[in-house]
Length: 180
Ligand SMILES: CCCCCCCCCCCCCC(=O)SCCNC(=O)CCNC(=O)[C@H](O)C(C)(C)COP(=O)(O)OP(=O)(O)OC[C@H]1O[C@@H](n2cnc3c(N)ncnc32)[C@H](O)[C@@H]1OP(=O)(O)O
Image (cartoon, rainbow, N blue to C red):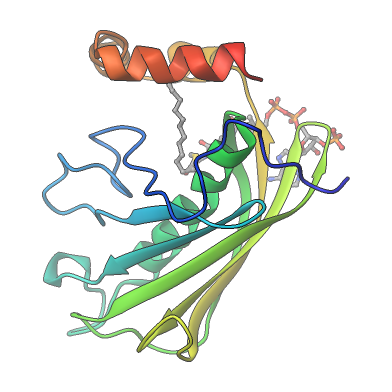
Protein backbone atom coordinates (compact mmCIF):
# COMPACT_ATOMS: atom_id res chain seq x y z
CA UNK A 1 0.00 0.00 0.00
CA UNK A 2 1.18 3.54 -0.73
CA UNK A 3 2.33 5.25 2.50
CA UNK A 4 0.07 8.04 3.76
CA UNK A 5 1.47 11.07 5.55
CA UNK A 6 -0.44 11.68 8.79
CA UNK A 7 -2.49 14.93 8.68
CA UNK A 8 -0.76 16.10 11.89
CA UNK A 9 2.75 15.32 10.64
CA UNK A 10 5.25 18.18 11.00
CA UNK A 11 5.30 20.52 7.99
CA UNK A 12 7.99 20.04 5.32
CA UNK A 13 11.18 21.75 6.49
CA UNK A 14 10.32 21.47 10.19
CA UNK A 15 13.02 20.05 12.50
CA UNK A 16 11.79 16.93 14.27
CA UNK A 17 13.87 17.23 17.45
CA UNK A 18 15.02 14.26 19.53
CA UNK A 19 12.47 11.57 20.43
CA UNK A 20 14.49 10.79 23.57
CA UNK A 21 17.35 12.79 25.13
CA UNK A 22 19.42 9.66 25.78
CA UNK A 23 19.02 8.26 22.25
CA UNK A 24 22.46 7.49 20.79
CA UNK A 25 21.24 8.59 17.36
CA UNK A 26 19.47 11.89 18.08
CA UNK A 27 19.58 12.64 21.82
CA UNK A 28 21.24 15.79 23.11
CA UNK A 29 22.30 14.14 26.39
CA UNK A 30 24.67 11.59 24.83
CA UNK A 31 28.15 13.19 24.74
CA UNK A 32 29.42 10.74 22.08
CA UNK A 33 26.10 10.26 20.31
CA UNK A 34 25.44 11.22 16.69
CA UNK A 35 23.27 14.25 17.53
CA UNK A 36 21.56 13.61 14.22
CA UNK A 37 19.08 16.31 13.24
CA UNK A 38 16.16 15.22 11.09
CA UNK A 39 13.80 17.47 9.15
CA UNK A 40 10.41 16.58 7.68
CA UNK A 41 10.33 16.41 3.88
CA UNK A 42 7.48 16.19 1.37
CA UNK A 43 5.22 13.12 1.47
CA UNK A 44 6.65 10.51 3.82
CA UNK A 45 10.28 11.57 3.53
CA UNK A 46 12.97 12.93 5.83
CA UNK A 47 16.32 14.65 5.44
CA UNK A 48 18.96 14.58 8.16
CA UNK A 49 22.53 15.61 8.83
CA UNK A 50 25.24 14.14 11.00
CA UNK A 51 28.90 15.13 11.30
CA UNK A 52 31.36 12.32 12.05
CA UNK A 53 33.25 12.99 15.31
CA UNK A 54 36.56 11.48 16.53
CA UNK A 55 34.52 9.27 18.93
CA UNK A 56 32.89 7.63 15.88
CA UNK A 57 36.06 6.13 14.36
CA UNK A 58 36.61 2.54 13.31
CA UNK A 59 39.79 2.67 11.21
CA UNK A 60 42.04 5.67 12.00
CA UNK A 61 40.38 8.83 10.73
CA UNK A 62 37.36 7.01 9.31
CA UNK A 63 33.81 6.53 10.53
CA UNK A 64 32.97 3.11 11.95
CA UNK A 65 30.52 1.24 9.71
CA UNK A 66 28.23 0.53 12.64
CA UNK A 67 27.99 4.24 13.38
CA UNK A 68 27.05 4.92 9.75
CA UNK A 69 24.42 2.16 9.99
CA UNK A 70 23.13 3.88 13.14
CA UNK A 71 22.79 7.17 11.23
CA UNK A 72 20.77 5.38 8.55
CA UNK A 73 18.68 3.53 11.17
CA UNK A 74 17.94 6.75 13.06
CA UNK A 75 16.95 8.61 9.88
CA UNK A 76 14.73 5.73 8.75
CA UNK A 77 13.22 5.50 12.26
CA UNK A 78 12.33 9.22 12.11
CA UNK A 79 10.03 8.50 9.15
CA UNK A 80 7.58 6.83 11.52
CA UNK A 81 6.90 10.19 13.14
CA UNK A 82 5.38 11.32 9.81
CA UNK A 83 3.10 8.27 9.84
CA UNK A 84 2.40 8.76 13.57
CA UNK A 85 3.20 5.10 14.05
CA UNK A 86 5.46 3.59 16.71
CA UNK A 87 7.76 1.10 15.02
CA UNK A 88 11.11 -0.62 15.55
CA UNK A 89 13.70 -1.80 13.07
CA UNK A 90 13.18 -5.45 12.11
CA UNK A 91 15.65 -5.52 9.24
CA UNK A 92 18.33 -3.10 8.03
CA UNK A 93 20.39 -3.89 4.91
CA UNK A 94 23.29 -1.49 4.42
CA UNK A 95 25.65 -0.78 1.50
CA UNK A 96 28.90 0.99 2.35
CA UNK A 97 29.87 2.62 -0.95
CA UNK A 98 32.80 4.85 0.05
CA UNK A 99 34.78 5.56 3.23
CA UNK A 100 33.63 8.52 5.33
CA UNK A 101 36.43 10.51 7.08
CA UNK A 102 36.13 12.13 10.51
CA UNK A 103 34.85 15.69 10.17
CA UNK A 104 32.63 14.79 7.20
CA UNK A 105 28.96 15.78 7.28
CA UNK A 106 26.71 13.01 6.04
CA UNK A 107 23.62 14.32 4.22
CA UNK A 108 20.88 11.73 4.63
CA UNK A 109 17.53 11.35 2.94
CA UNK A 110 14.96 8.64 3.55
CA UNK A 111 11.47 7.74 2.40
CA UNK A 112 8.82 5.16 3.16
CA UNK A 113 8.22 3.11 0.02
CA UNK A 114 5.30 0.93 1.15
CA UNK A 115 3.19 -0.05 4.13
CA UNK A 116 1.65 -3.53 4.49
CA UNK A 117 -0.21 -4.12 7.74
CA UNK A 118 2.34 -3.64 10.52
CA UNK A 119 5.25 -3.68 8.06
CA UNK A 120 6.80 -0.38 6.94
CA UNK A 121 9.30 -0.58 4.06
CA UNK A 122 11.77 2.27 3.61
CA UNK A 123 15.07 3.26 2.07
CA UNK A 124 17.77 5.84 2.76
CA UNK A 125 20.95 7.28 1.27
CA UNK A 126 23.81 9.20 2.85
CA UNK A 127 25.82 11.58 0.65
CA UNK A 128 29.07 13.43 1.28
CA UNK A 129 30.21 16.88 0.14
CA UNK A 130 26.63 18.22 0.09
CA UNK A 131 23.03 17.05 -0.35
CA UNK A 132 23.74 16.36 -4.05
CA UNK A 133 27.20 14.83 -3.45
CA UNK A 134 28.25 11.26 -4.09
CA UNK A 135 26.49 8.46 -2.20
CA UNK A 136 28.62 7.03 0.63
CA UNK A 137 26.06 4.73 2.27
CA UNK A 138 22.56 3.47 1.54
CA UNK A 139 20.10 1.18 3.22
CA UNK A 140 16.81 -0.59 2.83
CA UNK A 141 14.82 -1.31 5.95
CA UNK A 142 11.76 -3.01 7.32
CA UNK A 143 10.22 -1.45 10.41
CA UNK A 144 7.52 -3.27 12.36
CA UNK A 145 4.75 -1.36 14.09
CA UNK A 146 4.58 -1.99 17.86
CA UNK A 147 2.49 -0.74 20.76
CA UNK A 148 4.03 1.54 23.39
CA UNK A 149 4.01 -1.57 25.64
CA UNK A 150 6.96 -2.85 23.59
CA UNK A 151 9.18 -0.30 25.35
CA UNK A 152 7.46 -0.46 28.73
CA UNK A 153 7.73 -4.28 28.85
CA UNK A 154 11.27 -4.63 27.47
CA UNK A 155 13.12 -1.47 28.55
CA UNK A 156 15.14 -1.36 31.78
CA UNK A 157 12.77 -0.10 34.50
CA UNK A 158 15.04 2.80 35.59
CA UNK A 159 15.03 4.42 32.14
CA UNK A 160 11.35 3.66 31.46
CA UNK A 161 10.41 5.29 34.76
CA UNK A 162 12.56 8.34 34.03
CA UNK A 163 11.19 8.63 30.47
CA UNK A 164 7.60 8.34 31.62
CA UNK A 165 8.10 11.07 34.24
CA UNK A 166 9.40 13.49 31.60
CA UNK A 167 6.31 15.56 30.73
CA UNK A 168 7.33 15.93 27.10
CA UNK A 169 7.86 12.17 26.67
CA UNK A 170 4.45 11.41 28.13
CA UNK A 171 2.84 13.92 25.80
CA UNK A 172 4.59 12.30 22.86
CA UNK A 173 3.69 8.75 23.92
CA UNK A 174 0.09 9.85 24.43
CA UNK A 175 0.04 11.49 21.01
CA UNK A 176 1.16 8.17 19.53
CA UNK A 177 -1.66 6.34 21.28
CA UNK A 178 -4.49 8.71 20.37
CA UNK A 179 -3.33 9.21 16.78
CA UNK A 180 -2.58 5.67 15.58
C1 LIG B 1 7.96 5.75 25.74
C2 LIG B 1 8.34 5.35 24.38
C3 LIG B 1 8.00 6.33 23.27
C4 LIG B 1 8.27 5.80 21.84
C5 LIG B 1 9.61 6.18 21.30
C6 LIG B 1 9.85 5.71 19.86
C7 LIG B 1 11.19 5.03 19.79
C8 LIG B 1 11.76 4.93 18.41
C9 LIG B 1 13.19 4.43 18.48
C10 LIG B 1 13.86 4.56 17.14
C11 LIG B 1 15.31 4.10 17.20
C12 LIG B 1 15.79 3.71 15.83
C13 LIG B 1 15.18 2.42 15.42
C14 LIG B 1 15.80 1.26 16.22
O1 LIG B 1 16.97 1.08 16.27
S1 LIG B 1 14.71 0.20 17.01
C15 LIG B 1 15.80 -0.94 17.92
C16 LIG B 1 16.21 -2.13 17.13
N1 LIG B 1 15.14 -3.03 16.91
C17 LIG B 1 14.67 -3.88 17.84
O2 LIG B 1 15.10 -3.88 18.98
C18 LIG B 1 13.57 -4.79 17.43
C19 LIG B 1 13.73 -6.17 18.06
N2 LIG B 1 12.75 -7.09 17.47
C20 LIG B 1 11.52 -7.25 17.98
O3 LIG B 1 11.17 -6.68 19.02
C21 LIG B 1 10.57 -8.12 17.21
O4 LIG B 1 11.27 -9.05 16.41
C22 LIG B 1 9.60 -7.28 16.29
C23 LIG B 1 8.75 -6.32 17.17
C24 LIG B 1 10.38 -6.47 15.23
C25 LIG B 1 8.68 -8.22 15.54
O5 LIG B 1 8.06 -9.10 16.44
P1 LIG B 1 6.48 -9.32 16.52
O6 LIG B 1 6.27 -10.55 17.31
O7 LIG B 1 5.83 -8.06 16.97
O8 LIG B 1 6.04 -9.51 15.02
P2 LIG B 1 6.15 -10.80 14.08
O9 LIG B 1 7.37 -11.62 14.36
O10 LIG B 1 4.82 -11.45 14.10
O11 LIG B 1 6.40 -10.10 12.66
C26 LIG B 1 5.42 -9.25 12.07
C27 LIG B 1 5.67 -9.27 10.57
O12 LIG B 1 6.98 -8.73 10.31
C28 LIG B 1 7.82 -9.67 9.67
N3 LIG B 1 9.19 -9.54 10.19
C29 LIG B 1 9.56 -9.32 11.48
N4 LIG B 1 10.90 -9.23 11.56
C30 LIG B 1 11.37 -9.38 10.29
C31 LIG B 1 12.67 -9.40 9.73
N5 LIG B 1 13.76 -9.22 10.48
N6 LIG B 1 12.80 -9.59 8.41
C32 LIG B 1 11.70 -9.76 7.61
N7 LIG B 1 10.44 -9.77 8.09
C33 LIG B 1 10.29 -9.59 9.42
C34 LIG B 1 7.22 -11.05 10.02
O13 LIG B 1 7.57 -12.02 9.05
C35 LIG B 1 5.74 -10.71 10.00
O14 LIG B 1 5.32 -10.60 8.64
P3 LIG B 1 3.86 -11.18 8.20
O15 LIG B 1 3.89 -12.64 8.56
O16 LIG B 1 2.85 -10.40 8.97
O17 LIG B 1 3.79 -10.91 6.72
